[in-house]
Length: 257
Length: 205
Image 1: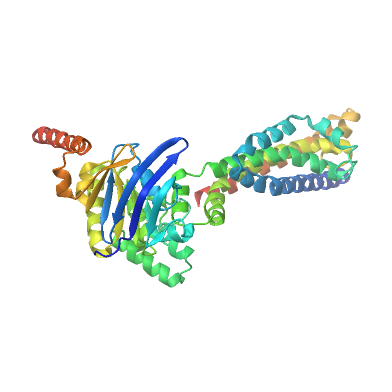
Image 2: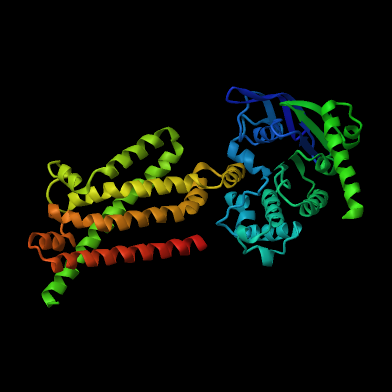
């Protein structure tokens, strides 16, 4: 598990136009970790994720992936070594589920038989029977099923790093909880390193091995789950207060509900 | 209807069809790649679309007139008519292709890039297939309009069903005008229906 980090972020800065979105970001991600980037809307957490796979250029600093600076990587190669999942899955509407999941292996020119085997394995892993779901089109899926396909697609070429941008935010609470649990189970089986963006502190506490709390483009706090629950930082307190509020409401509504 | 009239209607209908098919074909060959290029150069969009728009507003008879004295693309005959018809067909195809490609869902594009697809792979495997319904709609609009405009091509000796219409007007004989107008209208209706059918089939798949 330890050893040299798979992802190193050094003094990263990023600007959009004139505005400095991120500054002074330093972070090491080790193999097997699930790092949650937590923060309010506009804190720069999604921007940080997009810097990692080169969707947004850096204004300063450096990101090293597998020991090599991302500036030296061929962007296409780099991205194929990072699975990517976004909020509404971004599945290709004109391709079947099987074709969507097989995208990166197909770009990498795997043998068709090997792609099929891999697609079946992954669909089973995310809980979608391949015979039933493989030939379907994305519009024939529920939101939760689309997200499962999105995760299967991200895992397809067995990338060492997964990037997830609020992957469950658009789902209803029950489906979200199911997928969060499945994500944890999946992590046990495939042992992936992940960067996971969310604004939901409950989700962060559930899936993270470490939480990186971002505030106004800077790292406010890096903490394990227990450290986070005891953290004194005002921003962490604000998130935890929101959580307590939610629990209290649930307690009040439970007897009547 | 005499046998000779029937034969002439058939010949002129075929001529008309050829004019339209060649004009639409050439217009599509210019407008579709042109629209793809414009998706990569946002700064040019306003100017190119504006130009196509202005060309569209030139009255067709006047455009045929302008083209007559020009070398290569002008003069009496069919090729001048094809140039003019092409000019009119450009805008709907250009605009629809552009909107079709730009209308591809941002999340779909973002994941295509993030999955490590190259620029060309994204164009051929994501953007163009998803723009096909819009491109076909543009072709349909252009085709129907061109079938109508092509009747005026007879004025510069390009043939087609306009021959009947101009002859009927000159001889003040409504039945001759109808011999040109009715087949042209039918052709437009058929083209509209047929292309709409293809459009629907493809967008269902």
